[in-house]
Image (cartoon, rainbow, N blue to C red; front, side, top):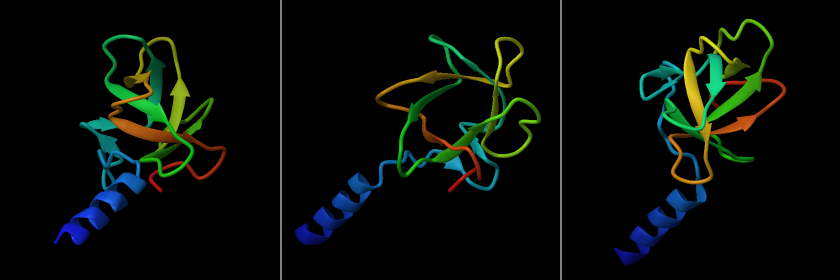
Length: 104
C-alpha cells in the first residue's frame, strides 16, 4: 500500500503541468486560451508560468488572426484576457513555440 502511494506521488511530481486546461474547449477557468492577450502585473485573469517541458498549452505569438487554440497576439488595449507571468502557483503552464500551438 505504501509503495503504491509512493509510485503515484512520484508520477504526479514528475509531471509538472497544472491540469487546469479544459482540452475540449481550449479554456482555463472559463477563459478561451487564444486571442488578444495583455500582460499585466496586477489583477490578471490567469497566472502563467513559462516552462520548457510538460506544458498545459503550447503558445505561438502571432501578429494577426489569433483565432485558434494557443495563438496569442500581445496587445496593450482591448484584450480578450490578461495574464501575469509567475514563477510559482500558476493557473496554467505554457511553452512558447514557433509552430504547432495548442494543447499537447
